[in-house]
Length: 122
Figure: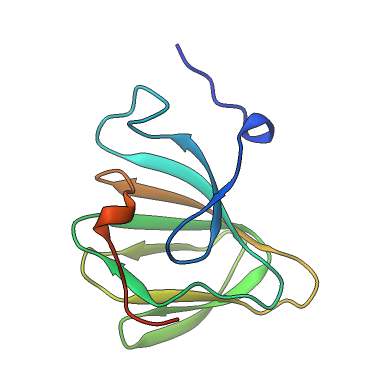
């Protein structure tokens, strides 16, 4: 059994510019078909607009508040909100706070891969 402890995981930056710590995925755990990571967007920051060719994502916001764009729709998001992102739909996330990170759990199925990510904006 592998137990991932968030505070022991090393963070890295994904293609969209968010910082993540992967809790489960095909590289570091027994998960073969999905991945789970904690992501954070710094105060005042944003991810690059992008989509994933095959992965469906779930964003569960755990801290902070932000503005989510999913296709042509936009809405404010905060801790406790969950957004489903279908494959092929452009999305981006902006942190509305000037002093605290926007934090979320991100589940991808199939598992997150840089090669599946298409950046469409900066």
